[in-house]
Image (cartoon, rainbow, N blue to C red):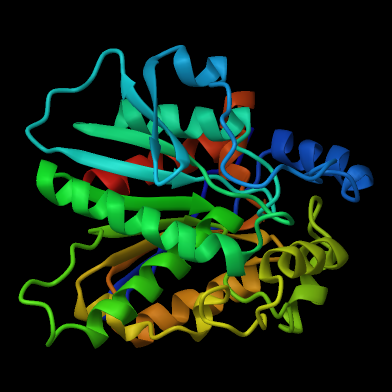
Length: 336
């Protein structure tokens, strides 16, 4: 008989509420054992993607319970997902989702599935999956200014439509949304005395297993490698290098740990997220979460020991932990 999951929540007076879990199902254990021999191949892009934003074909898992429409914003392809049986809500909410993949692969069927679930589970919400420019042909020095123009355009449009905006992403996608918003807030803060009206910003960020420091210098990364069934130090260093291009990996635009975190508090942007104990990116993710706490940023975080990188994306395969994590995500987003 399975043991009862242990859920611990932080009790200290903090703006960041952390829920910590330690349980692991036999099915998840077996999956991790099966993946380990192939960790030098999992998640690898296989070939370089072309310059620019790719037009992609919606996955059946995304269209089964959602209507999907395609539009182009600043030459970036966006796929809007609305539940075929939407929940009644007076709130107009939109989640822009940036899928992970080492900055080098387009959204997978798992990303389509995650977006579909959010569109179904969070009342009044449209989920917009973003096909952003990919490395190595679109490294950060080229892609980031382009993404910033995209960000400004979607925020201006949301203000006109009266939509609440949440930017979400996993892994490298989580890196992009954190970096974009922090840099935009920095620019806005510098221009606050110049503009009569402050620029619009999202109500929240949701980052799943985000990549937060592209130097990969945290000594705990190597300590975590023995337990990570998916990622290797060599791989995460290579993907970081491909995205950074000519930029130094300490640049705040690629490593959000080096940005001014206090701006999130100043402008009232909540930051939620997930970290996993058997994930090479977790040590930096936890450090970033602690920075949020130190700067008084409001948010809810789930840390699940013995879980692998982006384990939440495995829910279509019946993994209990993934299903419960997806339910947790939906509950957090409903509050925004």
